[in-house]
Length: 291
Ligand SMILES: C[C@@](CO)(OP(=O)(O)O)[C@H](O)COP(=O)(O)OP(=O)(O)OC[C@H]1O[C@@H](n2ccc(N)nc2=O)[C@H](O)[C@@H]1O
Ligand SMILES: Nc1ncnc2c1ncn2[C@@H]1O[C@H](COP(=O)(O)OP(=O)(O)O)[C@@H](O)[C@H]1O
Image 1: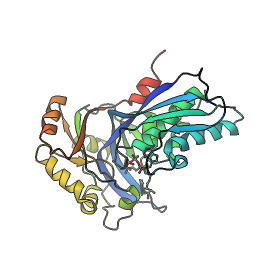
Image 2 (image 1 turned 120 degrees about the horizontal axis):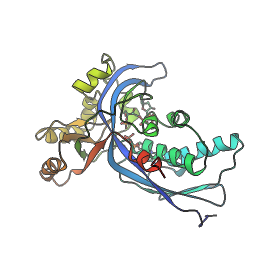
Image 3 (image 1 turned 60 degrees about the vertical axis):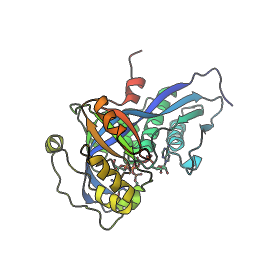
């Protein structure tokens, strides 16, 4: 039962880029230890939330190929609802509307960001009083990338991506992000026998000063030639890198105009967008603005 008296709250779920991504080892549980620099983009999915008169969770529209109960938005909402129940707090259900702009399996962290925005927003709407640390712990159970979106600060990440050191000093460049028409399966890349898994760990200062490569780029380009082709093409204009386990690739520029100039030269079949890198998550800007 929808509670029409409850207002809709609209919150972005921004993309992230991995400005560099090193794999420094493999843990006994099969997960990989990484070193990566996360920066957000001012380019987002949008989620709208409204309390219900009953305790149901609804999501519209469905995402093609993702079961409602597997959708990270519903999973995040359900974990929080169950936590409230365990604490003896009665919370209503929620209607959630999703405007999906971030390509799935693009290495832009769309699913993780949707989950984080859901946790942050429902924590506020339901007045659960969970701290960011508590939400990050819950989020880590949903995906390795969720905590950085919960804390909302550009960060140097280690471990599986949950040990975060904020890096507010990153330059907020403009990015041209190109999306090769393939969906990369993260688990497939991490389980590939040829993946580089022994890059020596560096310290954060070195990562910030020298940047670094993406250790997944070579394997992904081999399995998905579309990614390699897009990298070769973009590299003709400006240094191009892959984000996460792909498939999206990006180049950075000092201005939106410079990014647009290169975008104009891309063949029509290459989907792309231009967005500014930001060190503070747009979700946080909206949810934690002074009232
Ligand atoms: C590689 C990164 C870098 O930012 O980005 P994406 O390309 O996925 O966006 C992430 O660490 C991905 O995080 P996320 O997409 O949340 O991954 P998860 O759902 O936790 O894991 C998917 C699968 O990838 C493998 N995996 C993931 C992360 C990691 N550090 N080691 C792994 O081996 C595991 O096999 C896991 O089952
Ligand atoms: N709300 C969601 N948005 C995107 N993907 C989701 C969502 N919920 C579950 N998924 C699943 O997570 C996978 C990874 O999606 P996504 O986070 O967009 O990619 P990546 O991890 O490469 O950045 C998708 O292929 C999809 O099966």
